[in-house]
Length: 419
Picture 1 (tube, rainbow, N blue to C red):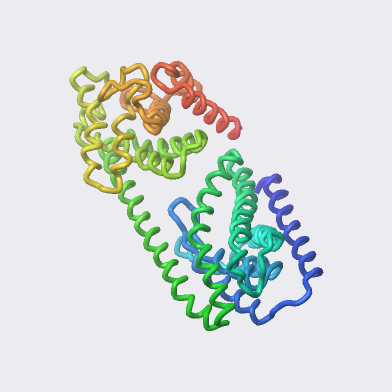
Picture 2 (cartoon, rainbow, N blue to C red):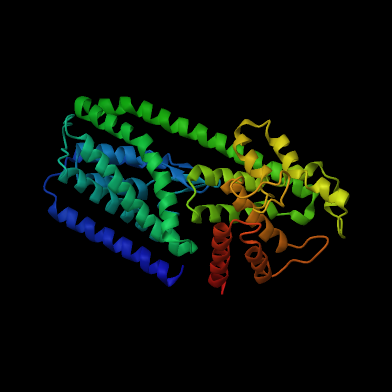
């Protein structure tokens, strides 16, 4: 762990401990029974965390924390949320992680982050007139919306700071991505928290126990969705590997192109869904080469005009292959146009500037870069500087100049961070 990362995590933990001590000193009366009930529910909810393919996670814990704010207020709700995330047990990569086999600094950081986020969010709820212990249906909605927004912003700001330091990615890019994901999660989960609070206020423990059914059903629905996405991603990767088996010189090419494309798409502020489509298109962009003879793909010398004409068919071949798969239809246009150029000299349709979608323009740049920096049967790999010179030379002629310039900056930043 770098010194900068150690300083950041330590600062967050100390801030969380300071806020906890202040909260304990200022609190007057705790409903111990309700506190224990919601703490146990929080631990259970966080232990039912659903991990996603992109290393994110979906948690029902926010619903419990929100219900605790409505029923108990601050700081009880903040402490409940913090205990839930610190004492949870989560299964990942075939192992079960809990407080006794999880790094202490990570446990403390996560707990401090949630305590700070939930605590400040609860204060906003209270300052805007939100009540606790009973639900005022005429005035609780606006404070509740503010509470959810504040929680999301603070929590994801702290997480984004950590990610930015750890990965070198721009803080704002991390923040936009994290807030977008967390925001959707909270929109879906928040109504469950409200209903749970109402059930507890009206029917005490029985109401909460009855409400566990819908909560677990929502979790099960999320799980099914994630499983479907896992199958989707695995299918895409399998299709990509099919072409790499046929053309060993491109081994790893599609995955590298995907990583470059996703990073560039985020830097260009594409939406989450567009970045996801770009990622899948990048993984599958050469799938059409399955229909091309190996003698052409692996030819060590210059291709004849007839052979190159066959190579130029691979975008259309790729579209024909994936058009039969419903969930890949959105990426077919990206694949079709990834060899088009701004001046109309690309293929297969000779499209020009304005006719080429953003995702295809991005894919075209990163595809060329990775191709020229990799060994091929007919030449050795170029250096990074040589490859960037090709991108710069094609800017405004072959490549969208804004995208090309951003890509060059991105690669130069990566190279500086490696030194």
